Image (cartoon, rainbow, N blue to C red; front, side, top):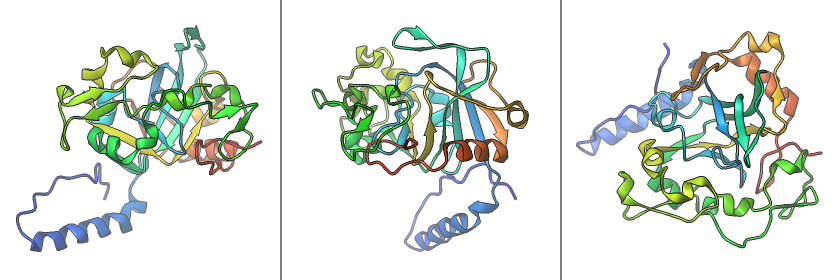
Length: 267
């Protein structure tokens, strides 16, 4: 049996129901390996290191793509992929291509509200004058050397995507949040309503980020087995059982590092 979503809302009216909820959670955990693997792919308009945000050892999608973040089928265990489009930009420069090249692939490990994200991921909040994470191709925290260190911004600490501070615990509406100063175009407040509309933040502990500057070229025999996005889609293009594609990316990158700041392949 294929469960489209494991996030069903169950109303708890008494203490006895808690045992049932515990049972359901254990059942899902034990049987998740029998669920079909899903992949949602989309074309990225911009790759500024902000959405997604690949810093501090976890890739997060907290802004943009509100329909994808709100989608009840996009849950832990599901994969998301961002692809290079014809007009993909970074710092005002176009890196677009007619070829199908991968900017990032990530597996969702958690999905939480924007208010919860503010509380649980303070390291992702933008900070001014915090210094560079990468210098001379090395991580300033752990000393690891990274392939294509030019992918990482010099002001990357300031580039955290946790930019919406809730005014109270269960904040939901756009007006319930305070926009934190940041170095992205989201700083002018024009994107706040659209960002908050997504309701959730996608947390990905396993991810492979290549950037639009040096995206990963996927062989045609692998591309034929997944749905490649050929146009913009709010929810993304869905592929069921993209096992060969995921395996190819994993094998190409080998094992991501456990650097406390970034996941990337070590030289």
